[in-house]
Length: 570
Ligand code: ATP
Ligand code: MG
Image (cartoon, rainbow, N blue to C red; front, side):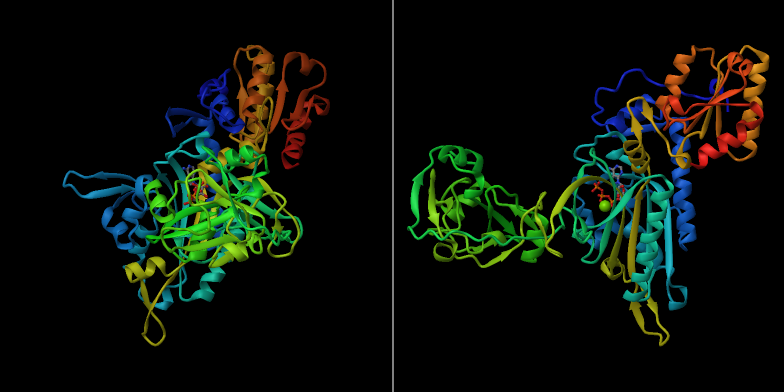
């Protein structure tokens, strides 16, 4: 391909709304153009990389026994109502009505749709296992679309769904998909780590997220240095046994006028935040519950929800807090007097706590010298906080450290959540009707593209892995008007293309500096410089994008192809 025949437009300036390197480079290298917040066009270069990622996904899915299908992106509301997710999806789902006033959704995912499809197809155990996938545009009205393709309103996802006869067969499919995912990201040149995550609303069983580790990642992941346990911070468990010094003095009121947050009270009393206990009131399935955690920690609502065994959990509003405790937010605590008799739970690190400072359930007052065994009525202690660096691993007792990640994929055991709702049954050998066991498997295809950039770039631009680069080789024709030079460049292009290598020839009448800058910005893995001066001095210059100038080699034209092949294989 000749540069002048394709559409490449690089930008000199970073777009104003781009906060992270990969977003800046995506736009500056001309891979994508923005239409509006969270909406992007793929330009020819971006499209080529996207297709390469899609093909890797496709090859690995096919090899793992999945079949490609394509379902409508426009989905009738009836399907979503069957599982209750028409309401549960809330504002995240784009909704519309057709001219006959039928409610529809622009699919954010497709569990309902695929289950409905398969319910009408599956009848016998002989048809199972069944595993289907599609590569399709998905729509989500994200609260904060940002970071370019990382969190957009419309994005490309590979979503796959499996149907098995029983839990054992479903488990086997799950691990087949898990290993296929490892290969997908590996082949894309992405370092992605599987981390165990919380099943949340999707079912109660096992799930792993695949995270590309990067400082710019939106998610925090807890890694154990000892046993290798990796989990996202919603799920990661820690143990905490603190030995408190016993304070025998009775609990005593302290006036804390105007101080509401832990930070304010701590600064008012000139004590560290962990001398205090943070008490929050939640409505859990409609019942009020108080949760206590150390003043310097945050409640993990996922763990709390799981511990309480409830379906809904939300912070109680100001009026409710006053009704239950008799005080305003900021002055509440796990101590008498409480206006209502509510359940109180606390983080495990508070078991045996003594000499603590808590809200007094009286506006502008706290209580000091609080001894949890003596002064409170905690119904249970559990790990209820968000893990942080330095916490103790619940599995092995070693130290947890936090890293940041980009979720590029997820595999999920769904059990019978959807097949129950749709009555997706097969007849077993004895003609007994049994529910299928489902799994679902997603890859953020467009997000993966940008994650590759985030993991592989330098100050000059992108450094594409050869497998997903828009072109693997750029041939810089420095003298396009000189016939001999152009012939060498074009012959080299043809020879490489004959080997199945993607090549672009920069045949623009531009200064070498401009051409090299663009090549570095776009990040073609191998650069070949062909110019009249070079040819007179013995050949062409070859260098990998990842290497610095000192590694540049001059090779004879006849040896160029072999040398380029070797560099691409590195
Ligand atoms: P997140 O937690 O980042 O919002 P998710 O867990 O809701 O993602 P899934 O439902 O698991 O997303 O979707 C499968 C994959 O699709 C994700 O692993 C991610 O790579 C990608 N994805 C999800 N939302 C977006 C988005 N708004 N823009 C781009 N890719 C997305
Ligand atoms: Mg996910």
